[in-house]
Image (cartoon, rainbow, N blue to C red; front, side, top):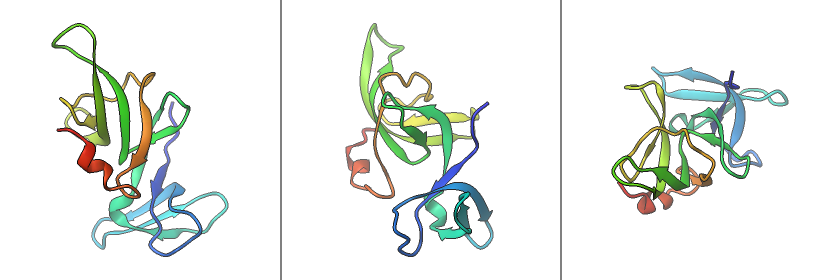
Length: 131
């Protein structure tokens, strides 16, 4: 069973770019709060909230929605692997975490995947993602 936790970018300066913990969401007001064990609920940018996928990259770093990853993806069209740089997101159609990049696909073989940033702190990485 995977840990259910979230990450978000604080609205005000808080000494860290991202907070990790439980989330409180108000979809009507578009307000979100992240609460960790050691902190009170802190308001975060609603659109920056991402869920932990339960997976870690090849370096042991946790992979969250909104992360940009690079590595190899199995190819169904030929023998071998495709290089991919992709954004991680939750796919409601197949209820799994997926990658938005070369051909898309599910996020499951992460032995060769590395988190290189996220779209909230490093939006320029989206320009490098190939769709």
